[in-house]
Each structure stands twice: as C-alpha cells, then as structure tokens.
Image (tube, rainbow, N blue to C red; front, side, top):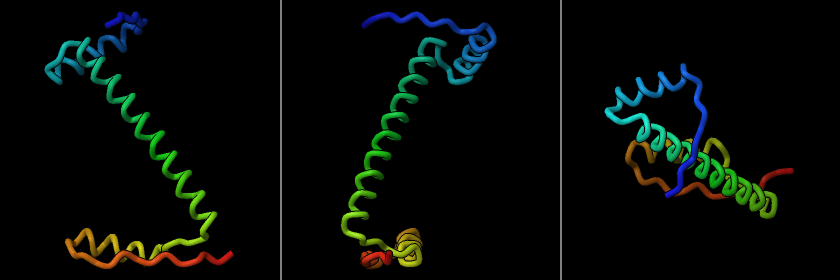
Length: 94
C-alpha cells in the first residue's frame, strides 16, 4: 500500500473530523470511504453513459423505440407487483 499526501484547508479538515466522529470513524477511515464511494459513483456514471451511447446507436440503427405511454404503463404495472407483457418496440417515424 502506498501513501499519498494531500493538502486540506483547516476548515474542511475540521468538517471532515466532525463528520467522521458522527459516523463513528477516524478521519482517515472517513476519507478513504468517501474516496472509494466517489470513485465507484464515477465508474457507475461512466458505465451508464457507455450503455446509453450503445442503446442510442442501436436506436439509430434499428429505428425501433417503445412509446413513453407504453413504457410508463408497463413500469407502473411492475411497480404494483403485476407481471405485464413487455411493450413492443415499433419503428420510429422520421
């Protein structure tokens, strides 16, 4: 494991210490956890954008979409615990 030094303004350092105490952690553990969460969120954002780009490319290629009305009805039914049929994709008008 390597060591990294960072400079933190005194006011932020105090806020970190207070937040760490509320969380029942040392400042060091709090900072490590926060960094890990931030990196994970960044990686998830990157994956979401990759997936969105992939799906957008597929939409442009196939021109098939599901209408918002059909998608909304499907999601609302799923949220109620029903098992509706998935809406069918249709060719999008130009």
